[in-house]
Length: 254
Image (cartoon, rainbow, N blue to C red):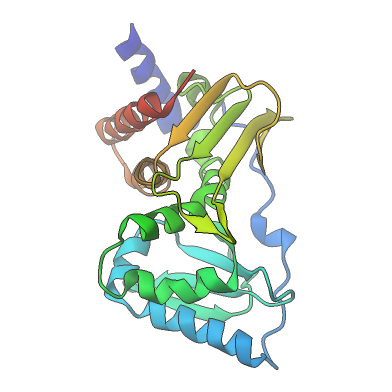
């Protein structure tokens, strides 16, 4: 019975059945922003991003994870950067390219931007770096994943048990601290008027709660944002959904 339900669901995905209307693009919420007269601090941020983008490990990490992304420096209102993949490389451009729909919109502190180079320069992420990357992408990743066509299918959302109020918590196994306090990243996810609303903090009594390790959080994002869109055949989509269900099952707490 379970296998039959999975086959029916995947068939619906392939056929594009039962989808909610497409939501307005993220790019419509933003303006290009200032692209000249950068301060010394803003120039340092730009250099850090461009230096990180040239690292092979950063390009490998980004491959398939996004087509383009907006980086929003939280401490510098009015500026932003567009990061995009092109011919296997990562490019950084001043300003938000509002002609292109971003996969991700990532707000970052100056410290987070400056860390980008050091995270990828040795070609691997240690436990703390893995957590900080997952932490930066946690909310943007959830927002992005709920916007892809496959997850706009009402049949898919029901099969994956995505309906109702969900609490999602990123675990901090190493106790990473920021400004003297352990970093917490908790989200509430709800379906309102046919669209997904994701906001910081835990509100209400959830229908389900997920607790994700940094590794599980990144794996779920990769499955939904990279592997599912790449899957072309019935069997490939079924395998991606099977893996997604496995990760989800081990992260569900009620």
